[in-house]
Amino acid sequence: MDETVAEYIRRTVLKIPRDEIKTMLQEWGFLSEAQLQTINFHQIKENISQDVVQLCEDNSANIKQAAVLDVIYNHIYPNKRVWSVYQMNKTGEETVIFDLTDFKKKFKRGLRSALKNVTINFRVYEDNAIWIRIAWGTPYTRPNQYKTSYVVYHSQTPYIFISASVLKSNLPLLCQALVAASNYHDIREMELRSHSLNSLKDIVFKRYSQNFQTYYPKPLPERNVAPESDLRIIDENKSEKERIERVNREIFGDGPQPKLEFAQYKLETMFKSDPKMDVLDKKEPFRCLVKFSSPHLLESLKSLAPAGMADAPLSPLLTCIPQKARNYFKIREKKSLLPGSFVSP
Amino acid sequence: GVLAHLEMLEARAHEAAVKQEETEQQEEKLARLRARVQELRRRRDELRAKVDLQEKGQPGKEGVGSDPAQPSARAVVEWKIKSVKAMLQIFYLTGISGKLTKQGVCFCISTAYEGTYLDSYYLDLLIQPEVRIHRHSVPVFIPLEQIAKKYLQTDIRRFLSVLSDHLNAYAGRRYQADQLQERFSDQIEGTLQRNSLCNLLVFNYDVSSTSKSFPFSARLLYGDLCCSLPTEVVVSCARDAPASLAETAAAHSDLFRRTALHKAFGS
Image 1 (spheres, rainbow over the protein chains, first blue to last red):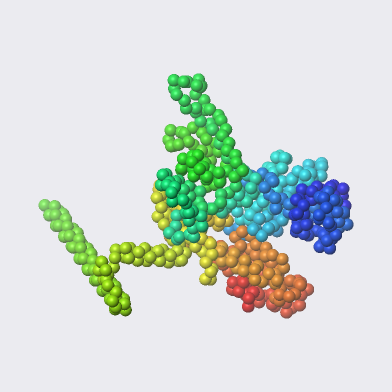
Image 2 (tube, helix red, strand yellow):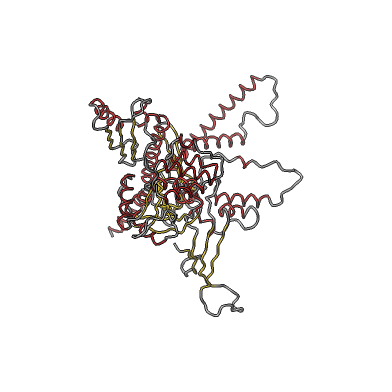
């Protein structure tokens, strides 16, 4: 077995938290149950990884098989990477019958025609997610297994989730191969990025909770029952509180919000000041960047109004994030015909 | 001269017709109201009879305060609310229901397959300046934009009907595939290979649940997105398999084309 493969397996195993190593190796399926029994999973990780490498040596693992373990690790811990969303377009209207084998073949051909030194792995999961791992090389060097890009694609959807590695130069080639393999015409990057892959999926697949008005009474969550409060306490602001709750629920819905870490607004608007102060001599747009960051941005926005820190309803620039499926905005000066700031598409 | 005279006669005839229509409408209205009064009177008598019966069943109970024969306003309102709710429930169960919103309408399309209710999908439509979709919860692999482009502006009923067909068929196909995976997992090799729309299923299977090999290889293609039965079925077995297996394969191929997948396996 190649030295590089051994080293790669060792490093991949070291990344996995100790309690998870056994389950991941089982899912990998490269080592037999009998072989796994021989490893002591309570020793320090260094030793566990050495044992695993030894067993893989016995089974003569190649780099492609080793890469599968990496895919499994990234599937279970996708939040360690930053994911961007891309949208594909096609002009035809024919129903596409998506054939997985066809897709794989076309994708590999697309990539390999331009660059021979790539390692490509596919893995399909039950929710119809196709995970593709690509390790990039150059025309003269072997693929670097530590510089990988991951692509997640759900068949028959126009969205692709890419976690590119440092090598941004390979992105055009990757996009082209994807477009060709999935029978679309072109692809563009959406202004939507996050660590949480599932939240990105929720936003573009519209799986997050939106509040739709219906007559059919949905079962209300338990927390709607007012908690027993001391009758001696009188809430002076009760109606206002209820209004805020209601408006908030209308905007954000009842369920959990998708998890985003930041929203960025690039302002190219004119600075509006007291004309007497005349802060800026030149009437130029005042360029500034406003960035909201939070471990869970949308939940914190949802709790701003009830906490009394902002007026309800919140600015539509903040609340439109899931619906517009973007968290990077460019705000320009309003043109005379359009009311409000012009948010670039 | 003559023409002016004719015009005058025409105008008069028109007026007379309008007046006649008005009186007809008035009479219709009157008749309707009379019928309603009859209905209400009948209902009041019914309720009176009911109350009398109740009172007779409990002799000695004094009727206190308001006249029990007259149903209280509150009871009437409650009854009205209940019947309206029931009506809305019925609409919801038919599969397509809607509610007027400030800017338009919000439709709810519920899907079902052979008696089992499945997911509901929502569409928030704006009416001004033209009908368009504001928000929705339709899965992204359903060709919503295509259907909207074709029908939304011109025939909204058709739009809803076509969309409902797509969603119901998708829900049906997914239900069949899920049922197959759940109930007959020991007859199938590994997991069913499918795609997001569940319109291409590929799997290897066997007839009995205890065998270790899966000689039959099935590929079901659902070409019609509004249909929950496949348009093309290919069941094959290994080239060196006995002729009897080949015959069974052909029979299965026909069966899958006609019957729901999980039911075909059940038989």
